[in-house]
Length: 563
Image (cartoon, rainbow, N blue to C red; front, side, top):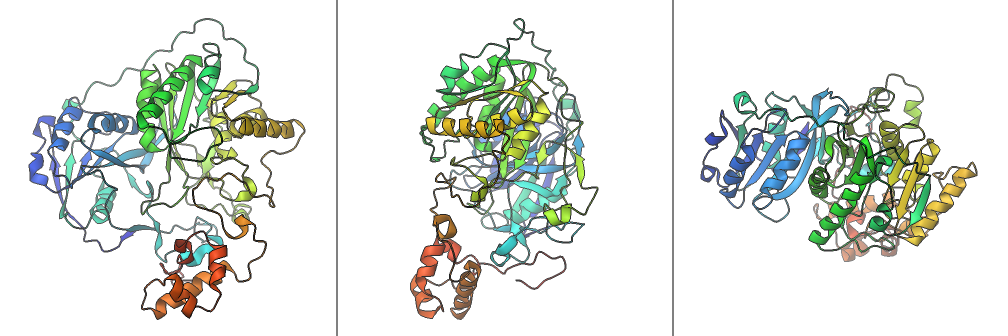
């Protein structure tokens, strides 16, 4: 269930095509919102060329959504990049996981959101209703002391849609309804659904599965090590066919504050650099083994092509719902882990053993201790691993991955004593998890400071200590955001007035002003607390006004009154 603000649901017209030559004249849809439903298993012969011609003729305000498999969606993005702007890659849950040999069961489809215009996506503000744990009857997410800053109905829509589902080959009714509301604003009047899913006679032959690539000889033994140096220089030192699992979480070129890397270089230079280290990973990988690259979907579609150009075979697109910072009205939660194998993939070593939390259960320790039946087989849609947001669980690195993510990947793709490679080892999460799980490891890191941090944490592990243990009194210097610190994060030991009380006071003043958010001077004049508390305790005026912008919510089911 969803709720869109100030939206008039678009009328829906469906066009069933039996041949790609029947693509309608794009001039009929100006300005338009369109949904193209691709075949459930593979792209139609000639589809991309026909789609490109169609897209090029659309009105400059048009929005195009494409529902396809992740493998086909990555190819579609590349073919229309010159006429359509990439806006979103939404992972939509499938009604039933699709099992395939040597792969994780596929549990999501790709919903590409593209536009003819180059500005940010224009849409209605949309919320998704809260879901409730069947064991404790509370929301599946623990909102803690921030319930007053959330809406009574639900949370903002993200780019991972698990509250609805799609059955390939059937009409995507729930997706159509959501798109009709999401884009139900001027200048749009209608959602045109172009359905190609029944073109059985026009479907191209199934892709041939590549045979296992022959090894160049006996595998050379690689000993565990972490090295400090340039990624390309160090990768070239690795023998051919020597790595069992390669995992890369490269800089995203989003101007993060790394210690020894410029994270804001020209796009062409960034992609060229990525192509080089991907080629080296492919060379060092053993036949049948997996290379996994983590990135945001914008770059993952490029990595998909680069991994294929390196001679590897597509294995899985893992959609990790790892919400970081709510920086826009559709929250960026989808982080892609694009997995390719060298030749045909071997059976996944950990597939039968690993499970994930059932998505309708919460993560509260008090609830989990008293329940059973909350696990299910693992698929390629991961929602039960969360980012490290609390300072007590982070070290001085701006982009630290949760160890639960790396343990799952390593257990899934490797056996004991096999070799795990991370060419961007950072603070050492990958190599530490590999070491703890009885795998050999190679970690490469450019920054001497991060390398030294990883080395010291490996020393803790060898001494029998937990390198991931919480350290509640320490505040890291490195940050994953350009937003400054305030409150306890900036060293304030005790709040004279709780932050919640201050935010609710802003809400009271806003009500006195007829619902309008107060300015700093208005809050100083009408508020009951010194303005300096707001300056010291909050990182921005937006955070100050968070409660005034919304209704407040309760974590309990069937309680309608806001907190």
